Amino acid sequence: MPAYHRAARTAAAPPRLRRPYRRGAENVNAPLNLPAAPVGARHTVLVVEDDASIRTLLSSALTAAGYAVVSAGTGQEAMFEAGSRRPDLIVLDVMLPDTDGFRVIRELRAQGVYTPVLFLTARAGVEDRIIGLSSGGDDYVTKPFHVQEILLRIRAIMRRSNTPPAADEGRPSLRYADLTLDQNSHDVVRAGRLLKLSPTEFRLLACLLAQPERVVEKAEILQQVWQYDFSGDTRIVDTYVKNLRRKLDQDATPLIHTVRGVGYCLRLPRDEPRTAGR
Image 1: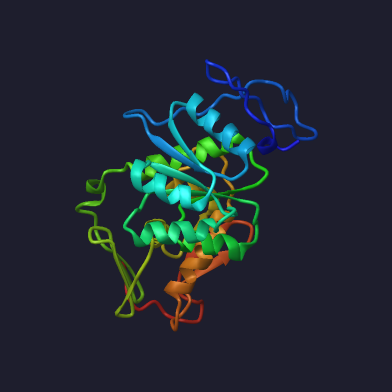
Image 2: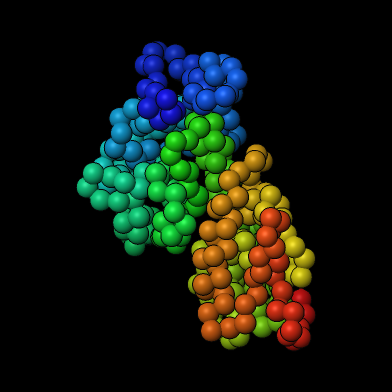
């Protein structure tokens, strides 16, 4: 039975969460070693999920890991809790009874709420992932899921979100061909055209642009851009690269190239000369 159909036990002490059943797995009844919340002030997570068993499981796991938890079962409740509680992160189910998670995050962003969002979805298609990430999502996990992976991703998002802005001050601009990325102002210009990138897209482009004409492996991109200290799902890299290409290569020479089975390389096509340096 998948993890999200197993309700957590309710008790005074934090629940002793167990590994989700998976055929062929060993020690499925061994307790989970839950990744702890980042050190510092206690972070609040809003869990938006209409399935009560999943909502209870996630809330219990987050509480046991050291987070404060607020929950909601509908999009309307999510909007209210996000506006009134101002959580540090939102775990947002895509399919809700009164709306969808994509609309919720678009409305939050329109209201000036830029809380990081981790999408929880049964939709595994590339286009659905692109819609979610383009709407302002920071990451996504598909159902069925492992609770430990959810906690690891939340910790990685928190770590990225809590990086001081001063960390980028004084860093040089990165240039290649007709592309310029300013690490101080966070402006990206391609052939005189200012590009509007999300923070994650900006970090992804900076990662590739800092190493032009070199193949960057997906695992390295996950570590540098998403700060995963675990083996994450590399499909999120593919999804973000596809979305970044749409913005970067619009009416221009393609710069981001796929090296199958390895990763990505930022370079001019082989038959075109490089016109500018870093």
